[in-house]
Image 1 (cartoon, rainbow, N blue to C red):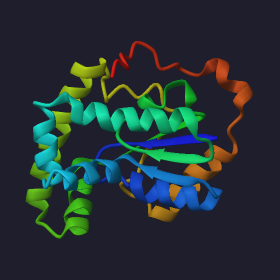
Image 2: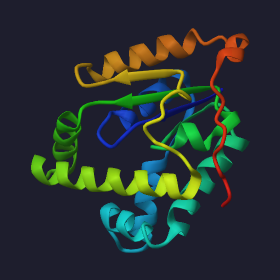
Image 3: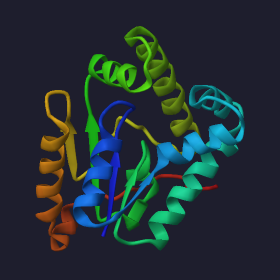
Image 4: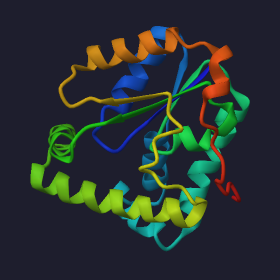
Length: 192
């Protein structure tokens, strides 16, 4: 089974994906880790790489190509990134979208990255706007279109354990025979 967990920065997707993978005995593959590796390889911060990606589409396309390859070739994986649900395409068995209000996400990011909430909020807004623009331009994806997801969850008032419990219970209750009601991922230009 391939489970994708997507959502904006600070939504709890990395925490949930790692915990779900451990619980299910699956591998956890993080698009954020891959993106940070790409930034490190270039001697840039993730925000700097994100800005550079606005001018160099190969940065996003390289990351997305890696995500699609993992989705197409591996099983027993929790694949986590902002676009994992889209990039996994028909290979995803179950897609999760996590979210929380920007104020909550900025506090989480500030705490995690040891920066002020104001800086975290500003960087998060800039990054989100930049990414949304690129997703539309590159692939025709509206990141706010959530109908492809099997589960959409606001994590603002839930502990990481509660988020995991909801996802795990839902994934374990997944019935592949019910896929005829599933919204397919269509109209996405995966031209890498």
